[in-house]
Length: 331
Image 1 (cartoon, rainbow, N blue to C red):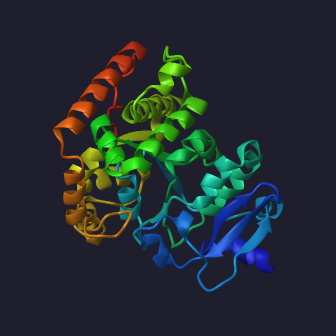
Image 2: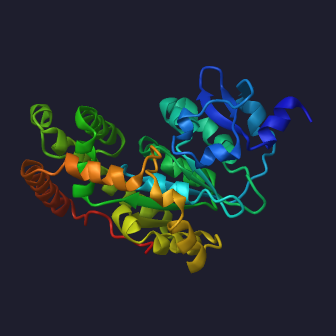
Image 3: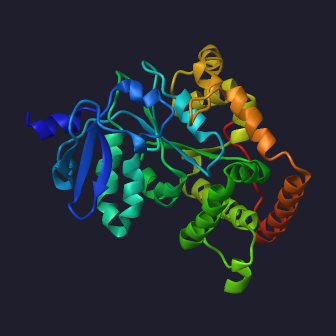
């Protein structure tokens, strides 16, 4: 077996970046323990070995052995990172949180289409005997969710979202950069899932940051609803707030939906374990961070703004004939 073939067969050699100009995938070597750490895999570095670039054509013709694969698509700030971290359970299932290679597929545009299938297969390599793999892409990769689902025809997907007030509060907690991100997300969503909102360019420019973010959230709801129609029984909707309130119930439902043996006892053990005592993205104490987050948006002015924007989105949704947020179908 050649060195390239050994890398392609070994999940510890992780597909990190797709380079469309070179039509190659760069692999980095990571230990299993890295999967359970808070930081996204997009930020991982190679552990004890130099990165290796392998031509896409060689990967596509290598006959990759795969495990069952499932996805977690999301609208951001809805506990999707917590869910995929909870599903990183050696001996049971594998959780991959935001691999950078998926974002690079999106950035590659049309050139990335030929790489979707081989990269999906690389992500589906089994890390342990009988372990299915759960992949949570960045929310900015929702645009290729249909392509990912078609590349893995047996995959199921959990579509995570949350109520608009929860989403907007998270945007505000991130300060100026959160508000800027909300505007960027609006532009992004209008690019691939847009609709005629009856506003000219001047009116759109005059929107507040929260209005732009709320419209992005609404467009994401429409997009996820379209995924439920396209893929039918292969997808389920999970409300992030409901997951936070009763994680054991949600984890058991994930197991039932995907065929992973997460019974009530196992779900309770995971939900009362260390993953749920630390913030999923930073690793800091969850209770302390939650208290700080609540204090950051505790204001009558903020509550009034979120309330008015939520009412506005409710009117838009009614005109569009869509109930938002999407009704949970997993639990």
